[in-house]
Image 1: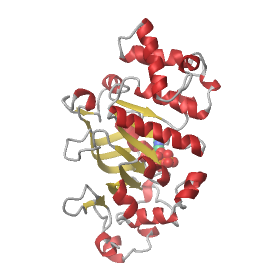
Image 2: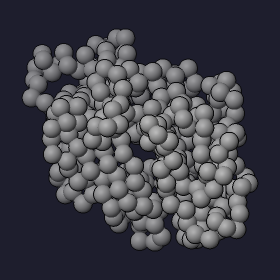
Image 3: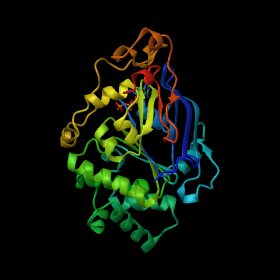
Image 4: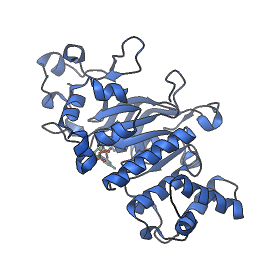
Length: 341
Ligand SMILES: Nc1ncnc2c1ncn2[C@@H]1O[C@H](COP(=O)(O)OP(=O)(O)OP(=O)(O)O)[C@@H](O)[C@H]1O
């Protein structure tokens, strides 16, 4: 599905974000391949949302350093020159949003206009990004609603958002987000507010849309079952840093970072997760807050495998541990090799 040898669609390097105080997101580096679904996983406060919003240019009053380079996507055959998103003027960012990068959030009601029909909102997005008018515009709106699995698209166009169920609202949000055929979709906990059956339907829908369109996805979640249902790759954030980045099958079989192992062993069994108990169970202790992260391994205070040396001596760097021929796998643990099962 994803060719790791091809140039990545999004390449984030040394992204650091603060709001005038300590760094919230600290030296974040990762790639998203063309058409790849990457789950960004971490406990509350790990910086998943702040990092993503920084990349999308949606943070106010933030100081952002580093780089987030967006290459030409599937729609341009990968030929478009890369665009640096950090520091891009607001006008150019607005032009990219929807067309190249799009997003969906946990609560569709807060993103939908309560006073405008679904049809009105879809027409507005289509007018902003296409030259469609009249009957062609209407047909495209219907086709979009069909694409996201809405059974009575004609009827749905006439409704106000409040008239829809949570799952239907999220489908409408997805239709709006993909209207301009973006290359990359950021999805921030899009299924968290939904009941489990609807959650599974929306995950299937998103995966199907990726298969159809080749759109890549950054899927932010603190639910490991959701990550395992949708992701090609898992990136774990801890206290503002990437601590593990691995293909999903490798991550769920052989996680290398003690933090990842703790999360996985604390996670309830998959059946229980699918029955609605899927929130990420944290290991004992708490994530250090941004001002109190120190210069040692940030997970040290909670780690069962901590040693004075090397864990407390210095901050481990993110190292590549992929064996010959294996896909990209990095971990931030100075003892990963000793601890490997
Ligand atoms: N505008 C802001 N000003 C100052 N601090 C902020 C701001 N937005 C977020 N933070 C802080 O940044 C840290 C990371 O927050 P973020 O929302 O990215 O975490 P998260 O991993 O997405 O968690 P959650 O799952 O709870 O959304 C938190 O400590 C939060 O308090």
